[in-house]
Every structure is written in C-alpha cells, then in structure tokens.
Image (cartoon, rainbow, N blue to C red; front, side):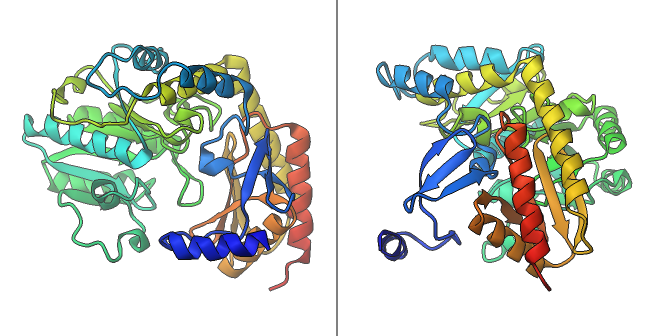
Length: 398
C-alpha cells in the first residue's frame, strides 16, 4: 500500500524525466540497502559510482556531523579553509596544479571547457574534440561533447565549436587536427562508463598525450565516474602514464554530498580570472568535509591495491561463472565492470531479474550491464553477487 502511494505521489508531483524502478530505498549499511518493504539488496550501483565507500560510512558520517555543528554554507566570497585542505589533498601528486570546486560532473566539464576556451582565446584556438561513445553531462556545453544522439534529441542547436573523433582511433583525431588548425582541447574518459565500460587502449592514450603536447592542445581527462579510486588508482589516467592539463571530477568526490571539481595545470589555471567563472554552492564546507574524509580513506596504497585485487578477482570469477552464448564480453578495470550481451532484450531481463533477486545493477546503452560495487566490498559479497547473476542467467530464455 505504501509503495502504491509513493508511486502515485511521485507521478503527481515530480516531472517524469526518470524511469524509476518501483523501489524506495530508505536505509543503507555497507554494501547493502533496504527498501520500504524491508527487502535487502546488495548495492552494486553505489548511487552510480557515488558511494565509493558504501553506505553509512563511519568516517564520512562523523565528518558531516561535525561540520553540521559548525557551518554548512558561507559562499565563495570568503576564504574557506576546508577548500584549501581538500585542494591540497587532491593535488599531492600534481605539482603546482590548482583546483576549482563546483557541484556536479556536468558543471566540472563546463568549467573545463570554459577554462580551455579562455586559454584558446589567447592562442587563436576554439575547437574542442570529443570521441564516440562519450558522455560528459547534460548541460549544453557538456551535451555538445556527448556522443549518443538520444541525449541531444530535442535540444538542438548545440554549442558550436565541438568536433567528434572515433574512440580508440588516433588516426581519426590526427585527421581532424590536420584539417582544423584551431583545435584547442581534446576531452577523453579513460574508461567510458555510460557507454558500457569501454576502456581506452594504453597505446592510444599515450599517443594522444604526445599528440597534444606536440600541437599545443590541451588534454582534458573526464574522471567524473572513474576518479577517486574506482579503477584501483586515485585517478584513472594514472594507469596510462599521461599527464592531463585538466581533470574533471564529481560523483564520489563529495562522499555522497554534491561536489564536483576541475584540477588544472599551472600554465592554464589562472586564465579563470575573478568574475570569469563561479558558483554559489560549489565548495561549501559541508561537501568539503565529507569529500576530505572520502578521499583520505581511499587514497592509501594498501586500500587501492585491494581495489585492484578485488577487481581482478571479480572479473576472473565472472568470466569463469557466466559462460553463455548470450554474452558477448565481460570486461572491467578495478571495480567498474560490465557484462555486454548480444541482445538488448536479454540485457534488460537480466538486469530486472538481478534486482528482483536482491542485486542492484545498472543497464546502460541497451546491451551492457554495469557493475559498480563499493570499493570496500567484501570478497564474500562479490561471490554472492556472482551466484545471483549465474542463477538469473541460467533461467533467462530468449
């Protein structure tokens, strides 16, 4: 009865731009969540890669409680000590880089584009290249760099000055640069989460980094989904031995409190002069306190090593357990994984059945089931999820 009323009120009072599952989650603990009907779910969506330390994390909770007793918002008209602390923490291995805080992933990418364009103005450059399969956000600038047409339909015209190359194809990018001498930046996700966990080739990203440096082009790494430990490194680009000029972050950055950021190299960061860009809520003390706790817990060698090992364990056992002609590929890096099916119908059935059996996973781009467990997930919880997936797969027919 409660669920029926919730669905009725949801449809009555909220704009229907989400296709929501008919589940209302009201409590979480570690890797588990619980709904209004007292059903238990193993949460391998993690708030779409936000809850990287699971639910009800003690350190994050204590940091938020302490900050609530002091100050939640003051605005960027004043010095905010926790912003400085967090920026210092994020740039420990990025010498002289500086940070701008905002509220979300799309805002982070908008800031990256604005900074790049401002720098480009002084270098007579204006074109930004993104790649096929890319998802960079839903505001107009970020949407203009996003590939799948379904996100852009109904919102044309897009922002001018964006061109598109093929993902994992350096020749495609070289071709654009050869024809357009005003390319100022290239934005890339080391792992394309929304596209179904498509992983950039190491050779490709290395060549891209060299190409950018040779042609005075900025390299922007969109780490919104895979940053903050998700791949077994603090930043996904660290797997590739490259040094981006701008890094965009969000999702897990705020430990569950809305938070985004860009980190920019010292040669370009100060092009965002006073008044050229800003935010009212970005970098507020509450988000900073929560984010500092999140990153301090994750950014430890032993923790990140465990993420890598658990990711390999998960990937290997998925491949061993889910052998089926229905599956095209199982792939992953760290604890972002995907099962790609040949049939979108089967992928949807698989996802819905997993949820019905107490495992939350996410379908993306029709054929891919994305798996995003908390980074502190237990091996026993990984085994439990694989058991559910195996049982579900065996029961699905065409």
